[in-house]
Picture: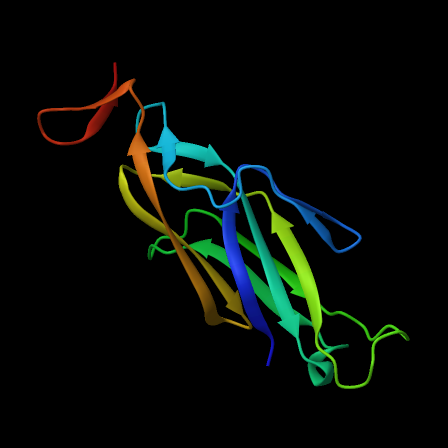
Length: 145
């Protein structure tokens, strides 16, 4: 069974030759400096562990937020092969990075979910806070000002 070893929110992320770079990795809290709702560009990085018997088969990978109304969703296919240097029976690590823009409706807790073939495999929570330019209205909803 393919597993997600870890899933992380970052400012940016990239993978070249199965090596990951991730400035601002582990981002928490996320500070919003504009009025809510706000669109926040970010990166989501993940490492998948693919067992020997699961290589050479495509798997649907989804990254989305945790609310019922999906504000950002990325779907991809992962199908690592078996390189000749891979010893029989060993799992492979597949690194993955995407750059969604998350729609943040207000301060509080948010989450990013990683699914494999439609089944939740990992969930990461983070906190959204308003920066100094965002203050609450009397009704409790934040505004800029």
